[in-house]
Image 1 (spheres, rainbow, N blue to C red):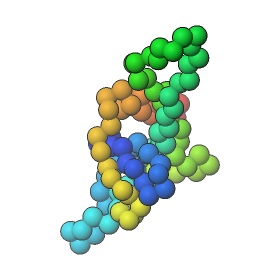
Image 2 (cartoon, rainbow, N blue to C red; image 1 turned 90 degrees about the vertical axis):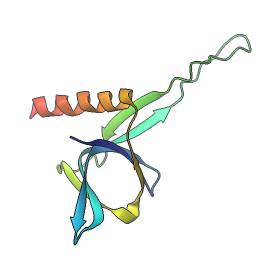
Image 3 (cartoon, helix red, strand yellow; image 1 turned 120 degrees about the vertical axis):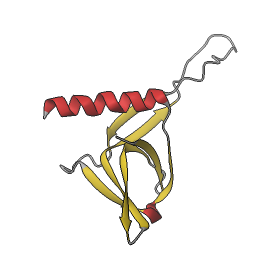
Length: 106
Protein backbone atom coordinates (compact mmCIF):
# COMPACT_ATOMS: atom_id res chain seq x y z
CA UNK A 1 0.00 0.00 0.00
CA UNK A 2 1.30 3.47 -0.92
CA UNK A 3 -0.59 5.91 1.26
CA UNK A 4 -0.35 9.49 0.00
CA UNK A 5 -1.94 12.83 0.76
CA UNK A 6 -3.19 14.69 -2.31
CA UNK A 7 -4.10 18.37 -2.47
CA UNK A 8 -6.76 18.90 -5.12
CA UNK A 9 -7.61 21.97 -7.20
CA UNK A 10 -10.77 22.28 -5.09
CA UNK A 11 -8.59 22.80 -2.01
CA UNK A 12 -9.52 19.43 -0.52
CA UNK A 13 -6.89 17.25 1.15
CA UNK A 14 -7.47 13.59 0.33
CA UNK A 15 -5.59 10.65 1.84
CA UNK A 16 -5.68 7.26 0.11
CA UNK A 17 -3.76 4.36 -1.26
CA UNK A 18 -2.78 6.10 -4.51
CA UNK A 19 -1.63 4.42 -7.70
CA UNK A 20 -0.54 6.06 -10.94
CA UNK A 21 -2.73 5.54 -14.02
CA UNK A 22 -0.32 5.29 -16.96
CA UNK A 23 -1.27 5.39 -20.64
CA UNK A 24 1.45 5.20 -23.31
CA UNK A 25 4.20 5.78 -20.72
CA UNK A 26 2.55 8.98 -19.46
CA UNK A 27 0.81 9.52 -16.12
CA UNK A 28 -2.77 10.53 -16.97
CA UNK A 29 -4.20 10.33 -13.46
CA UNK A 30 -4.26 8.51 -10.15
CA UNK A 31 -6.47 5.80 -8.76
CA UNK A 32 -7.43 6.57 -5.16
CA UNK A 33 -8.33 3.47 -3.18
CA UNK A 34 -10.55 4.13 -0.15
CA UNK A 35 -10.05 7.92 -0.33
CA UNK A 36 -10.82 9.98 2.75
CA UNK A 37 -11.10 13.73 3.09
CA UNK A 38 -8.75 15.17 5.71
CA UNK A 39 -10.10 18.14 7.63
CA UNK A 40 -8.37 19.95 10.43
CA UNK A 41 -9.19 22.69 12.88
CA UNK A 42 -7.26 24.33 15.64
CA UNK A 43 -9.11 23.96 18.95
CA UNK A 44 -10.35 27.21 20.45
CA UNK A 45 -9.37 27.62 24.07
CA UNK A 46 -10.74 30.36 26.26
CA UNK A 47 -8.20 31.44 28.84
CA UNK A 48 -8.57 33.84 31.73
CA UNK A 49 -5.13 35.32 31.20
CA UNK A 50 -3.36 36.45 28.02
CA UNK A 51 -1.11 33.40 27.78
CA UNK A 52 -1.67 31.22 24.72
CA UNK A 53 -0.93 27.51 24.55
CA UNK A 54 2.15 26.85 22.45
CA UNK A 55 1.60 23.19 21.59
CA UNK A 56 0.06 23.95 18.16
CA UNK A 57 -2.31 20.98 18.28
CA UNK A 58 -4.82 20.39 15.50
CA UNK A 59 -8.02 18.37 15.54
CA UNK A 60 -7.98 16.01 12.55
CA UNK A 61 -11.05 14.30 11.13
CA UNK A 62 -11.23 11.75 8.32
CA UNK A 63 -14.41 11.07 6.39
CA UNK A 64 -15.05 9.19 3.16
CA UNK A 65 -14.22 11.57 0.32
CA UNK A 66 -17.41 10.94 -1.67
CA UNK A 67 -19.81 9.99 1.09
CA UNK A 68 -22.73 8.82 -1.04
CA UNK A 69 -20.72 6.51 -3.30
CA UNK A 70 -20.38 2.75 -2.92
CA UNK A 71 -17.19 2.87 -5.00
CA UNK A 72 -13.98 2.24 -3.10
CA UNK A 73 -11.73 3.22 -6.00
CA UNK A 74 -11.93 6.65 -7.62
CA UNK A 75 -9.90 7.74 -10.66
CA UNK A 76 -8.68 11.36 -10.54
CA UNK A 77 -7.17 13.11 -13.58
CA UNK A 78 -3.77 14.77 -13.16
CA UNK A 79 -5.14 18.23 -13.96
CA UNK A 80 -7.18 18.10 -10.73
CA UNK A 81 -4.17 17.33 -8.55
CA UNK A 82 -2.06 20.20 -7.25
CA UNK A 83 0.45 17.95 -5.47
CA UNK A 84 0.87 14.56 -3.82
CA UNK A 85 2.94 14.24 -0.66
CA UNK A 86 3.80 11.80 2.10
CA UNK A 87 1.40 12.34 5.04
CA UNK A 88 2.72 12.88 8.57
CA UNK A 89 2.94 9.64 10.56
CA UNK A 90 0.03 10.38 12.90
CA UNK A 91 -2.41 11.04 10.03
CA UNK A 92 -1.17 8.00 8.12
CA UNK A 93 -1.73 5.79 11.19
CA UNK A 94 -5.17 7.30 11.74
CA UNK A 95 -6.09 6.47 8.12
CA UNK A 96 -4.72 2.91 8.36
CA UNK A 97 -6.76 2.29 11.52
CA UNK A 98 -9.94 3.66 9.96
CA UNK A 99 -9.55 1.74 6.69
CA UNK A 100 -8.67 -1.43 8.63
CA UNK A 101 -11.89 -1.05 10.64
CA UNK A 102 -13.88 -0.79 7.38
CA UNK A 103 -12.26 -3.94 6.04
CA UNK A 104 -13.17 -5.85 9.21
CA UNK A 105 -16.82 -4.78 8.81
CA UNK A 106 -17.00 -6.10 5.21
